[in-house]
Length: 252
Image (cartoon, rainbow, N blue to C red):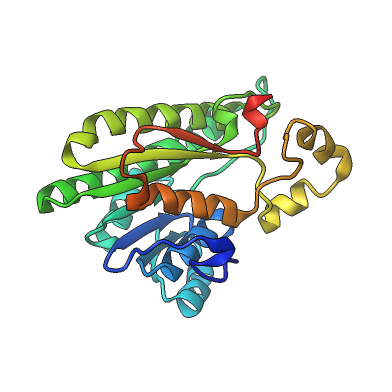
């Protein structure tokens, strides 16, 4: 967990801004929510787990919204409960590991619902509010390096992240004239507690690490700081990009 907005010499000031972060209960989303809060933002944290949100509220002062983003109504309800938002981070995502031949329509539909449809709906609701208020804003969609490269047993996930990148570009084209910047971040393997368990075996992590010139996986704070940069005024001319946070993986 981050220890404040000045860690590693990085500081952003989001005082007076309200940020909505989905998938904030665990992993990357929790780090993003905590980091933005440490930078002065009023953070609305969305998760399916009330318990995770309770500790986030207690430790970082985030406002909690329990919602299931797998349904369209759940995404709309989350946006309604959040109220006026200046900064949106669409981080919630799921991955159901199945080979291409074994990928079921149900798994594909669930993955697309959470990973693509929810960002669409939340982006619409937040953008409509910003436009109605005449306020500029920023949106970051948390994508993945798997939007660009194929991974075995990730047919639905790779497809969803490719779709999210394209959604990001269309959002940027249409919302830019309203002063709403839209970008995506595309992390490599990130060492959340779950990521450490999944990639802790050197036999599995070795081939992936060999493709990363910097020689290590990402930490959640690496992603959180990149998201904060894209939300900040320091990135005022950064718009419509899909920014790798991958240690050079896509350069190989």
